[in-house]
Image 1 (cartoon, rainbow, N blue to C red):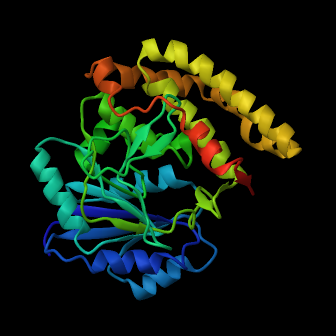
Image 2: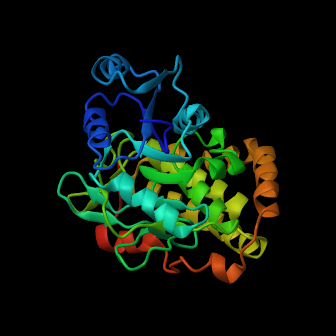
Length: 337
């Protein structure tokens, strides 16, 4: 097919039950765009690598000897990629047939480097989950379902399109993030530097939310998540706030964030009567920030030195009512497993 225009990068860990749907959707794309598919298998124990090697010999398979996490996995794949554009795709996501054509046309129409995505649909029931996300003051994603609103605060990393040159300009994902929140970081950095973050209002992808990492979705009208996902989410959102927020916002919102997040932890622990909530999610937050203080300071210096947008522009895709408060009113306390 010639030199790839797009490199589709799929991080896989124990995804033998979902990755076939993902890969089949990729190879069924209704377009003549040259692309390559790279899968990083993160030391799976379920036979994923052998299955991919046997059923999909056209896939470039990177087999990791150790479980290194989502950030390192994607950095390795993008380093290997030869396409002009990168599409990061979760192993539990499946593209609509016109997805690649829609993303490429969107990138060409914009005429400058940009991060793009598509409408996300629940694979179980077909419900529209979001068309990108707005953000609340504490960087919690707020689903956007307005097809006319394409400029968003972030797009979900389950389906994230970015020029390889822009990825390289930013240095990829900070590997010490591990997993969760790396998409938030990339989008916040792009917007701060003046690059658009947009969700196209057409086409889409199906996502088995939580299938590859666990938790993170509403089940039976209750938000269900895992201790691990919640802990990584709270930690990494704080990392993004510390590195990407303009100084005038940081000096007000970061202290408020610390107060509210620890108050949240205490209340959840008391209401649930389970010290595991505090010990696994909230207690590790400040020690993690202290351990990474040098990396955070260095990254903040790099990010803020590239800032090109005004504070007013930065705040456009924000909703000022905290998303957790809305979720509490709508769904009650989260189930943690």
